[in-house]
Image (spheres, one colour):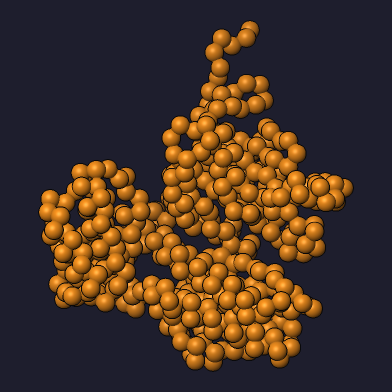
Length: 438
């Protein structure tokens, strides 16, 4: 008997396709088809292994469903990691990168196919993802953010074609090591672990420092050694410009040049929590630069990346890569610190932790005119951070930003007082006492 009404269900939807597939087909159809089959064996195996089902596939695209968003994101991370490993050992013309979108939504079931906004949003998210990356919706994020040991970065609300309302989006911070999947932890296990009584503030509650170790010259060419040293020095300089984290000086970092070392011991000697290290390999007129960010306390890779460039202008390559690494390091450390803080008891927070709590309240608040409780909570955390450490410049900056939003959202009752308080913060005229925004 035919059903009179469509059947619906809630499903986690994965949408993926190959970056630049049409161009590849135009250049060499046989080679592209061979590489697609090789890559699809990795994607489909991961989907099956984590209880997913591919229900749509045309050309290079994949549409799959999962009963659990956790299964869906673990499958996506696993095959993106496997594809990255495949690409690292393949010739440039044989490499394939996939974009992935993940959404959790209500779908219509018709035979073996699924329809509806739940599927459409996943497809739109896939098109916004970075090559080799994963983009997820806000609903999907809410389900997985506390269940897995992954880092997420908000990419804001985005308008999508034929979708009525903007969709909150996040991207997944991917590493490049097998430890990443093995380190996934379910939050429930952490919650059942007895919590120790908070200890007095130690050096761990201060703003964490970053050390950039001299990049390794993989080729042995002395000229390449200068290039590797230049990359390292530029990363240190660019990171210092962020002014968010203390950066260990070049002289201290370079004492470990040419040594094989235990990162935990190096971090302890340098007084750093995070380590940036990498390598440079030159072949003919091309150079491959790799870099990785490591949480030395937990011995955990936060991300790794590689750049393949031609050396037409060695200084341009040096500037480009060092700036790219600095742009990745600072936000990654901030996100990882916020995630680490979410596992701690909220009592006796340090100035740095109060600032992170304020940042979380500020970024996650629903904005509305005349009233914004999240903004008020953020301002209270920033004020407390400054009370604990009057030199924490980021807290001052965000306190001023809160004042700006109070003006924009018409929350403040006295515009002149708010403007004066913002100016006092910006000019840092009252470090010993906090300007209270009305």
